[in-house]
Length: 353
Image 1 (cartoon, one colour):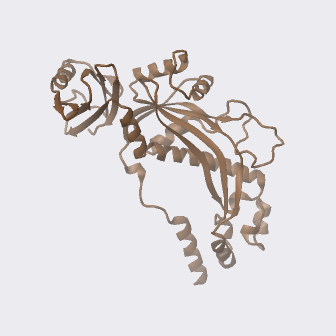
Image 2: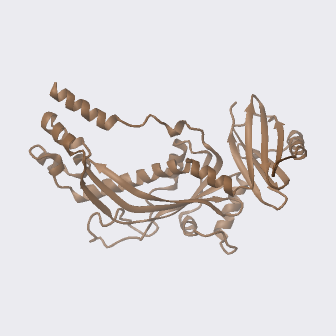
């Protein structure tokens, strides 16, 4: 009975988590191209640097903590944006992009070319990973889970699975979202390596596990090489998860909206799409893409004319409304508008068939 209660406590400890599922929330209405990279700075260190003095140990310069493909996969799994694509640019060119943290200047040919390509491919935003500043790992020591470890160790001998030691990586990843029209930064964030709780299994070797048979697991020493490798793995995973959560936050939507010259909305009613545009100054141009492909034809031209002629004043803004029925089934619609002063806004909305 006592062992059963201890096992129940263990299951409660590892199983309690929020029922909220951010993946179920609708994606943000943007098509995003991911570029740059989590290039580790500084580069290779002296091999004699002691364990945990750095989180990462890059073998060469321009080593990435994780690949762009992993970022794209995490954002897709997290249902963060309507459309996400990986920049196919070669590594050394992405490395240069990762170090351009200011507004786009005329001489920045690489970024200018990428922005042009992103616009041609129908993207609204550019997500740039701006290198990963490496740093050491802080040992926070035995955490508040040690009583559970002790109980489970005494009763059923499984104390080694309770994460009773805490560590903190000081590595930090810089990222920014840029408008593909101007290259202006609309949102930026620094993601830390974060706090990591480890059990004896995650921080010690086979000898440590044997010692834990007679010594409480939280008193068993770490195997520094295994510990560093495990923290490095978990730090990368936590950064990816944190990136996904941050980019799907209300802060990002608000930041992009503030930088945009127009509010764009699409409401679907069967096959019909109600297009709504709210803007401070008059529109001079309207364009659409279906599934990333420019939409052309008499019906598209007629819709654009209807939208442009529907303008009405609403307080201090101009409002445009018109309906559009696509002539073929599409999964995503990008709406792009330009104002008379040349400012451009775009968004990509998911559609149901």
